[in-house]
Every structure is written in C-alpha cells, then in structure tokens.
Length: 102
Image (cartoon, rainbow, N blue to C red; front, side, top):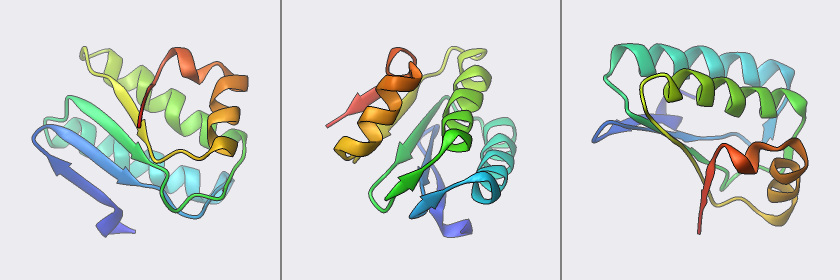
C-alpha cells in the first residue's frame, strides 16, 4: 500500500483501497499521520477511485485527518467519489468538513 501514498507539492495524495474497514483504516490513518507530520504536508486528498465499500471506520479516517490537518490551516479534499460514497459523506456530516472535487 506504500505506493498509494504520495506527497506532491505539499499535498498528501492517498489512493484508498477497494474496502475501507476497521483493519485497513488503522493502517491508512497511521501512514497518513506519519506523512502529515514528517513531510511538510498542507492538504490531504483522498482518492476514492477504487473504493466500493466504506464503513464507519472510513468516516473516522477522514474526520481524523481533517482534525489533524486543519490545526495547520490545511484542507481535506475528496476526489472520484461515487454516489454511494457521497451519500455516506453526506449522512455522516463530513460534506461540511471536506471539499469534494469533480
């Protein structure tokens, strides 16, 4: 999963897996936090291109990275979210915290 995390021009780009559940969310959060703190990251971009399933732990991944990056004045962006993922983001209230890019 290491190739799924890239820092480009102070943006942490995370290409999320097909399923975001309790097991994968811990690893995603740990790796993202490490890069946010060590690589001078200003913003986080979550790429949902491959994601077909996300449970509440996925919501926690996004909310946790929002809390961390917003302390530094950064933003969280979501790209390639299908209608199912958008519905989860809306129901959870994350649509108010993250910016969805087309």
